[in-house]
Image 1: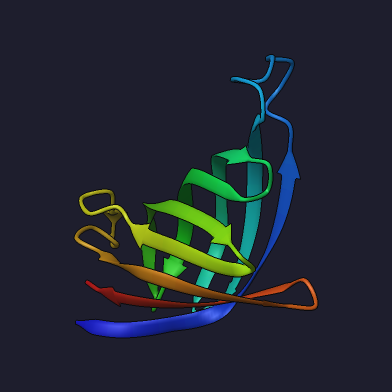
Image 2: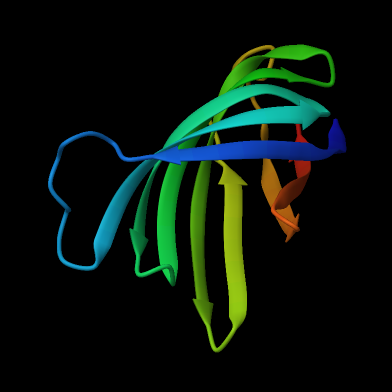
Length: 124
């Protein structure tokens, strides 16, 4: 089944604890998200960011998609240069569990007035 899921999420960032910076210029952050819409649930992740110009992250979603309950992992890679942002936001193949076993796909994101709107193009 190939489909598109859409909706919004709210994200909260927090420092990962009292660990020192990984290296100069790189910041480690933990985050929590609440998903609404076709994806409904919560996720947690870890991010490494460089000077607000590049980041990598892994995030585990737990909840429902199209009436199916389970979890899967997103992998993120984002950067910006000369005012242009690029984002690769994929579901890690093989990470699906429960009713979401076998899921794969990509997420596209738009942010307007701090509202995060997603569209996940996926197969299951």
